[in-house]
Amino acid sequence: MRRRGSNKMRTCCIITPHPFWRERMGCGTLMRGRYKLLRELFDEVLVLFITKSDETCPLSGATLRLYSPFSAQHRATIKSFVKNKNISLCYFSYDYWPGIAETVDCQTAVELHDIMHLRSESFAKFGVSCPFNKTKDQEIEELKKFDIVFCLNLEEVKYLQKNAVTCTYLPPTFSFQMVTQPKYEPIAGMIGSAAKPNVDGLAQLMKSSNVDVDLVIAGALSKLDLPVGTYQNRLTKLGYVATPQEFYSKINVALSPIRFGAGLKIKVLEALANGCGVLATNHSIEGFPTGIHEVVTIEDNFENWTKDRLQQITSVNRSKIESFINEHFSGNAIKTILKEII
Image 1 (cartoon, rainbow, N blue to C red):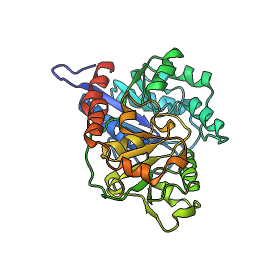
Image 2 (image 1 turned 180 degrees about the vertical axis):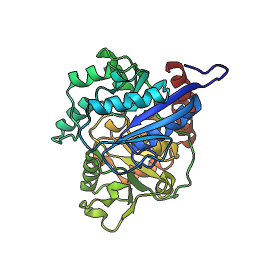
Image 3 (image 1 turned 45 degrees about the vertical axis):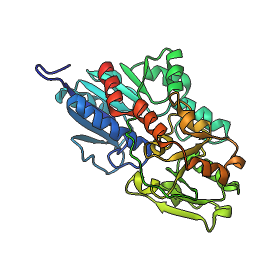
């Protein structure tokens, strides 16, 4: 798989439906990190962007537009692309198009942001419909067709292994960078997409009048018309921010009131990586490495999300957060895992 006389492997192709090069959501942050690491390991990294939109991938590779439902002809086109480009590894940003892994003549790896059937089950417990649904048997059998399965969430890794899927834990890549934050009074904030778990969490938070502090919301979540309750005069909506640091420089406590879903909550990790204390639900920290309880304050009862509680979090030990990030999410550690597996 390596070129003679080179420490790098040959050509990798990321196959994705997500425009991760510009995407603001957690999966965008995740895949930008993967793209960077893969470029360090391979001579060349291409991106095959499969989309129904008119957008074209600006990165080296190709864009495959789906003017019709995904079919055997599309799989044949992808197989030819992989062969012509002499690709040695296809790295899938989740398996949205069954049949490709068995078709291409190279090693295959799939990145799981969420286990879809677990996500659906979690949504259902709260009476919410999931936009993507797969049965357990269907998803497990599809995953078994890949040579490598990477998962972000340690609990989900164990779950897949119990279900006979050869799965490897591969955490996201983050480096610690302390952002200058407001001092003295707690200023809380939440950043996120308009995904149902985020909307539900923010709505639950708004129902509680105990978080008697200024509140900052950013991302697509801040574009929604939600009842703001007692926050009418204490709420700042930033909209989309150019960088995460723009958001974290305006708060000193990050909130993750998420009650359901799957995968790893990138918003929690991103807050820690920017040196920001976090108040979160138990669900928000599921699947994190040992030590997460030492750097994140956990509380499921929103009535206990009080100003005093937030005040305590503003003085969280930043050096302990930095050590946690460096130990579990540094680029070098994750690069080593990738190198060994691939």
